[in-house]
Length: 302
Image (tube, rainbow, N blue to C red; front, side, top):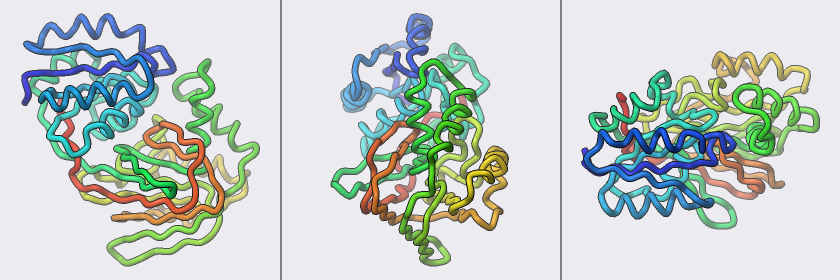
């Protein structure tokens, strides 16, 4: 374990509420021989800090939500660096894969010095206009993408209430999205060419705080879990919401759930995508999604 730690703190996490925790977290770093506290000041700053610290051999601690972790991971993919998570975001979905959400900040901070680490999978998205980006927990296009966008634009709500409000707001004007999808699975190629109500690809099990989008996801199997809800009438959604909360939707005849090494997606019209909760307003055309086995080293057992 590196003896140097860089805590990358995003004061904008949790819709700006994280800023109130900066002083207490900074004061808690006295238990380390070498630790620096860096507060981000603009979009992309977390990535800049992460790259510089990683090259210097420091262990990185992403202090924020899944979006902050996403930015840090994207900045250092391919570098020999360890990454830990100090959750100060609204959902912190990826951390739930480690079953450690009950620890408080002081316990987590003191635990980083003795934490174990393990390589976990990543996903990569290649966009039609060029360029690519990695995700560590999940992506969603269409319904869940629009929910993420609505959550971001309602700063007066937080937690589960913000997701409930967003779900209802999006549903009012929503219709299924035309998609042509190819899934490369161990059983062969699966091809879907029809309107889709909800499309998600996951490395982690949970999305939006409580929704078990991919209950069988395994961060170490080199595969991505795909969950596709085919077109349904809107009045049926409440029943599916309950199923997604329990993870039982994967057994529904209108849901395609499988593990894939890669996904090819074509959308004739742009729609909203979320990537680890971060919103991409216009995603469309040909999109490639690929599993990257054991591509980043994460701290765990805190």
